[in-house]
Length: 223
Image (cartoon, rainbow, N blue to C red; front, top):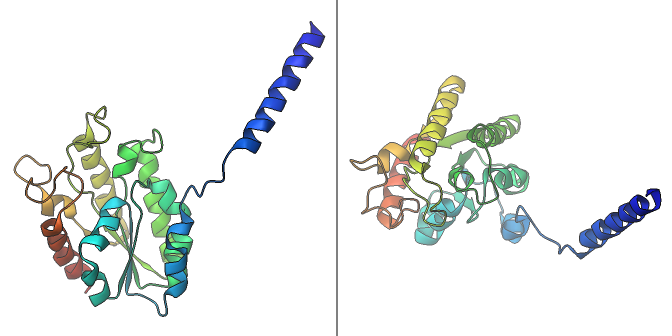
């Protein structure tokens, strides 16, 4: 019996070792996405916009907005707040901006990297703010776009409720610490509380008209 258990343990250890060796290298937080762009930044930008596909798509839709205002976009499609937190030093702190504009959370709600409680998503946002302040960068917090669904994860049926809860946490925290807030949730919401249909094709990602409205709101806060 003992010999059988010993053989089983040896086999499990060998399997675990082989599995670890067989794992492909993976840049989980995607440091590589902006490595060259970060190295090419010659002077400190006024603001870095940190986020996911909404920020990523913003630059693709209106690159001139970033260049005209000395903003840098550091959004990566699909990312959750934990990935943003991990790359925050390289993609924000090392660029020495005056402001960091943080928009994060919808991919956590969509469980892009597995389940995470809203409180832990919020904690990741708080950690980004604390890192920013420790490095003399002013955090600007953004409420999430008022999504009522995530098309790539239809099993999530309470998207709107989760977005509203996270937005409340963000606004309460900003009020307590005297941080500026850009309230995209109120700005883009239609009569049903979700993103207006003329501003987004999927209730999550703004179109150019939606981005133009967001730009105006952001500039009012940090101009």
